[in-house]
Picture 1: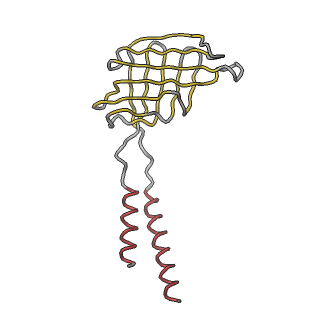
Picture 2 (picture 1 turned 120 degrees about the vertical axis):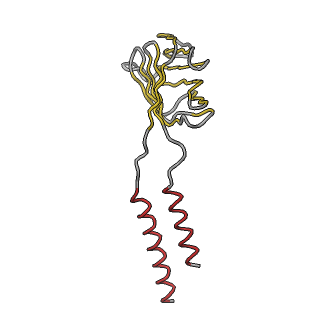
Picture 3 (picture 1 turned 180 degrees about the vertical axis):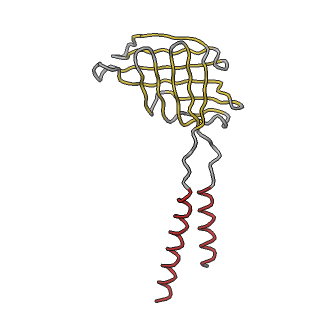
Length: 172
């Protein structure tokens, strides 16, 4: 019984220590004075993905966040082919009732991109600026921080738990 437990613990530790197949990237889109960085995407995965965090630099200021209204990035054969991103952020120097909406939409393999920024003080929206152009795309791999001691620590903890169980069983 104890051999099966140790074998299962070792298999679990190896599974945790094995590198994940998804490699995260930092995706930077820029066109006509607009630059946006997105995190939590993987250009090795085909299909639709959502960014986990973002930074948007427009004419007025730079904004960032983790939540958005629409958040879709589509990759095909390692290339970004579609972007649909809308997010809210407070406008600097205004009351909290005024929001700033950033939009980035790219179609036709990023040849036709547009970005619109506008305030939403009420239900009506007041456009601040509108930019169009062909996006320049840069992807930078984000290397995961290795944690080699984690596997050893997990195995030693499991071995200690097995020893305590064995000791307790022997005194009974």
